Length: 305
Image (tube, rainbow, N blue to C red; front, side, top):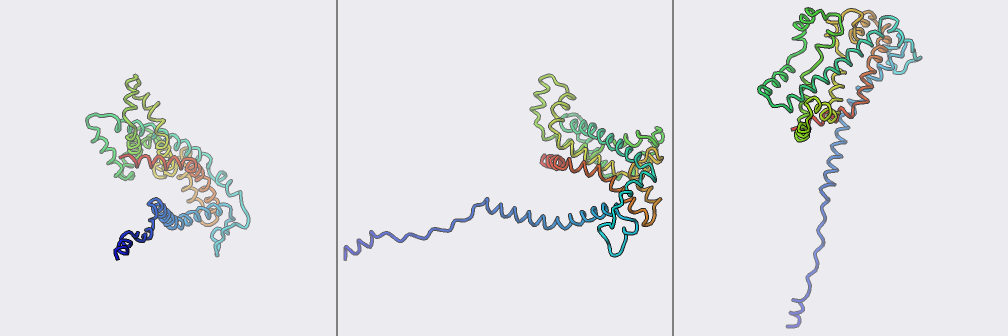
């Protein structure tokens, strides 16, 4: 009796089954991230296909004969590719001149915005002076004013200066922008002040600091600013129509609108499509080359607290 009781006391209890191991948190986060990515692609893919199909149809229509553009049922591929559609804009109007004008105005406006917005952004970010916050608030408030509201007094000023039908009138009024100042100010805010203070102790002036230190570190935001400004200037229609109405100063949007008015009906659609495709090429190429730096620049600006 005693031995049995002692044996029962000394007997080892049965080992419990091991508890199931929960999957690591990293695996759960990875699966959630994969699910969000698939959902995002499922939402964006149909919209992307719609926009891509419109662009593809416009490009294919530029090669079609006139009777196939609005044919029923719709035909995607032309029966024969007419490359002569791309030569007709140059024969009908001074299309090459319009193209050159747009390049000159777009490049000049972009360079001016890069310089002026960088200078203003550096001032608002790294200098402390009386009235800085109020002045920056005034600059930001101009973003709420529609451009059409200021076109009448701006045109009166340009007329008094004698800049109508001149490249100066097309370029100088667009030489800076409140959005560009905001973009550069937010980007420069992320630079540590210690680097700039060390350069000042070494005797460097502010312009040298801006050129040698700040600008090389702002490659992505500067690329984003240049891309945004160039695309907006390239597509601008109303201001070039007011200031550069003569044939020698017409830009592509104004020239395309005039060509559309002169080619009413279906016969001129292939030629207009060809002209539009040629007008689209610079911005398409520029965006393809700078899209990664554009995303980096906008992300760098958004990360600044």
